[in-house]
Amino acid sequence: MSPETLGLVFICVLSVALFIGFPVAFTLIILSIVFGYIGFGWVVFDLMVYQYFSLMEDPIWAAVPLFLFMGLVLEESGMMERLFRAFQLLLAPVRGSLYLVVAISATIFATATGIVGASVVLLGVMAAPTMNKCGYNVRMSSGIITAGGTLGILIPPSVMLVVMGPIVGVSVVDLFSAAIIPGILLAVLFAGYALLRSFIQPHMGPPLPKDQRASSVSYIFRELCAGLVPPAGLVMACLGSILLGWATTTEGAAMGACGAVILMLAYRRFTWARVYKAGMQTLEVSGMVVFLVGASNFFGAVFSRLGTPTMITEALVGLGLGPIGTILIILLIIFILGWPLEWIPIVLIVVPIVLPVIKAFEINLVWFSILVAVCLQTAWLSPPVALASYWLKGVVPEWKLKDIYIGMLQFMGLQALGTLLLLFFPQIVLWLPSILAR
Image (cartoon, rainbow, N blue to C red; front, side):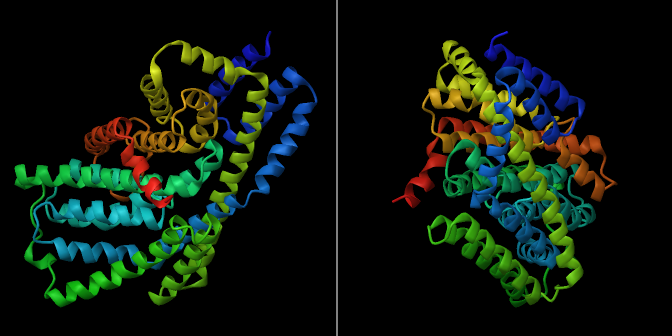
């Protein structure tokens, strides 16, 4: 058996193991050792040590726990609830106002947390009771909450983009700047669709009743300043310093983590128990991510040494589909894999496999990375495995899962529209990075 064919067998065995449910990291390591040893002998162990040491020496990975800690501390600080309440009071007279409040809040949450599960749960806890009380449509409500929550996977400081940058070989700063406009575009599509439906069908999103509105304009202004100015300042200090080149990604993440603790103190929510909880969750998630990245680096090194990526590249290029056709096939595969798998194995396994194909067509890697991110975001809303639906169902048990699914499918269509816009109009992604590079 040739090394290239052995690599194909490797991928098949790996796919079966992952779909059965074996742990991703250990499966990657064990199968890489087995097939690497069969393919080129004892060198596979040297390769494993080298890949893990090279990972640990890269300072970019320190940004992962720092961004996670920032988001978790902000979640514990109670700032999100106050922000949501401020927008609710401001937009109360508008038809479909709660849909708009969810879309705006979700966008701001994404810049502060970057954690999909936390955003969906938080939005569900804050918005669902008021939506039920005001007679809002359950399907539209569940759709915009889950779709808005998934913006955390795309809008900086997305942990996925921090992981994807070194994997693809592009600057995390470029990915951050490239993701901002697509993230805002999707948020506008979500809000615009919900508001349009509310104006065409007024019963779907009536204005809030008098008892849900503020007593004075000055009260709204105070709440808006208290809820919006601190997180906006933190985001400008953290992401702004990164995008403008004043700080590295890791330095900006450290600034954000420190600022989140200061805001927790300012909101008088600081307790050692909350800090400990955020720290332990950060340790669990970042440890898992770094371990998986090391395993995927090892897998990629073994797979490349077997020569299978070259064979796959030649086969796809030989189909004559061109760059757009090839990208569509790749995005379709990623979308389907996004049903049973989370983003981590897809970014760490699938993306390195197709990367030589993308390079062969000389496709812009930043543009491709954002397309993958948006496609994975769409997969979060795809029944029957869509995790966002179960998170929402967990905090709003009175909503039927069937209604949540139907609501998500509407917004999945908007996600698909957004993906096509980014595919056929690359400057939506590439304009801001080109401006910042000047």
